[in-house]
Image (cartoon, rainbow, N blue to C red; front, side, top):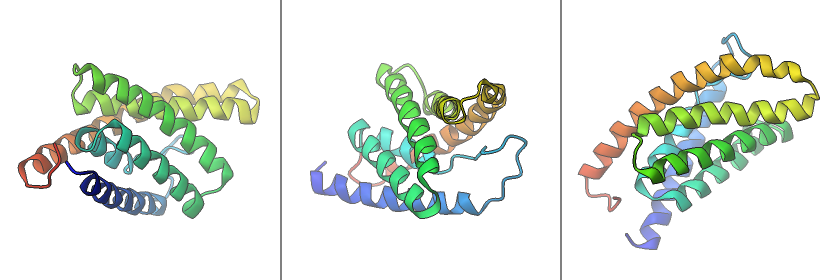
Length: 168
């Protein structure tokens, strides 16, 4: 695929991730654990990993994190989101590169490690070990949302590969 085509696809994916971030910001926090979210914008990162490659997917992820924090958040949101986003991306990239995991497995691990990254930042920001009590709940929620995102992402990747988009 030509670089210009990849860049255009990345632009569309960044716009989609921002739209999903905005939609998610409108959902009231009704979960039992503060800060728990569905992770809709991670769907875009999953699709990017399987379609445009890891390097571009990482760029999309980082741009989304920066733009979402600037638009819908603050410096603390940026810290938490960046820690979770980078850690989850590293884990997803490693699992993807093995070729032994489906999009569902890659996404579920990404969901869990996104929450782990955020809890690590909370541990240092709040200077309290009590935040570790959130971890079991966040692991469960990250697994569930990761599985759902992985299923949807897998369907999207299969459908995109059947049309002439120029992606893998």
